[in-house]
Length: 209
Image (cartoon, rainbow, N blue to C red; front, side):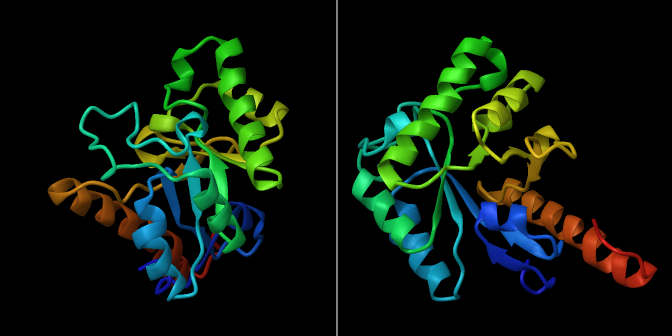
């Protein structure tokens, strides 16, 4: 759908730095092992790479601590070795904090710890700068945005459901997760957003933003 609309799929950081306005990123939250086992082979067969946002303190766990419905091993999280494998294959590893927390509800000192330590942990693991951030639950505040910039991120994403802005640290992201009617609504929302960017531009003769 996205590629048919004329967009090139790439990592989040590459899309953020791309000046053509025809770049899009495919992203995955939390760092589940099935990203590597299922999603990566399928996407690589199409020549597509993406970004996986990892909860740093949960790396290698048999199941995530934040989900009551999670099943051990079925919902296991990527190990350090698997994250290195993904990085070597050209995928981007971004930060999803140290724990799966609602940043906007935390004191500034705790937010700084979550953002700063997760970045440092992933950089030590991968040997590269970690520039991309996705807020757990899509939640953030002006304090969160300021801290992300101070700590060396270049951009951060929130979910479209909770809004966004023109700020590099509150970029909109469209979710395609879930099942049934929820999934249908999310796909329709993405289709509408693509039409606004491409269909309206074609019919109006204007340029996209």
